[in-house]
Length: 322
Image (cartoon, rainbow, N blue to C red; front, side, top):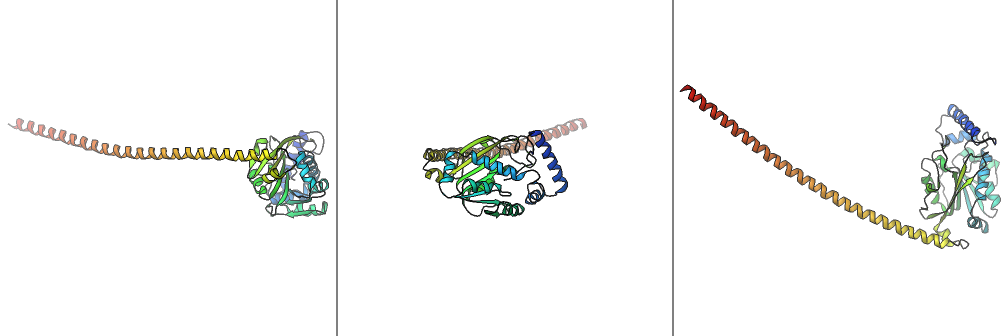
């Protein structure tokens, strides 16, 4: 989880804005690394994270996420051991919360900051922490969660797509909702429609704006839950599982039919383009031909007129000499 200069008082967004400006000025003056780069986060974790209550915010957001999980997904996580990954775990407070709420499961944390992982192993020991230099997830997990991370990326759906490749059942996201203006560290704004209903073999099964404590965030957060086709098909407690899968398959057919129709229209447009191009070339050739004829005829008429003029001039000269 990535914290973004949380408010340290209950005074609301005004003091948060002051904290954000102070943080940005301090980081710009002291740290030459690009914002949100791994080196930037290493520096932030070393000196700014605790100052701005990053660990408290991590814990609060994970507990908020878990308390708002839909009943069926909470039951899935509770009734059997699962493997759960907190992607962007920072100092591991979210991992500790997951392990406490779902004691039968194996919770792990991953971060691309080696500084954060080292701190997590000391601050919240007893869990697996993975340092991944580029953030890649190198093995599969039943459930992947990421809290307040995707907003730091220019192309968050590309990150999500990479995560889904390692996710077996549930993918759970918490991000700022309809954030405006964006925090200086944030690169993307999110609303419900920011997350496609269908993504690879996953279906968005939950989207909920959540009111948050302004001490931690001066606005709402958006909770998104994706379920894999297998999860929806095999979930015995989810009454709408079959309906969702059928709807997904119907959606695929609809998209396929639309794609085929568009391809047919594209082929027609290409054929029309070819005919127009051929017609233009034929017109150009005929135009050049007619122009050449016109020029020849005009030149011939000019030559005849000139010959007549010369003849008349010669005749006039002859008469004058006589």
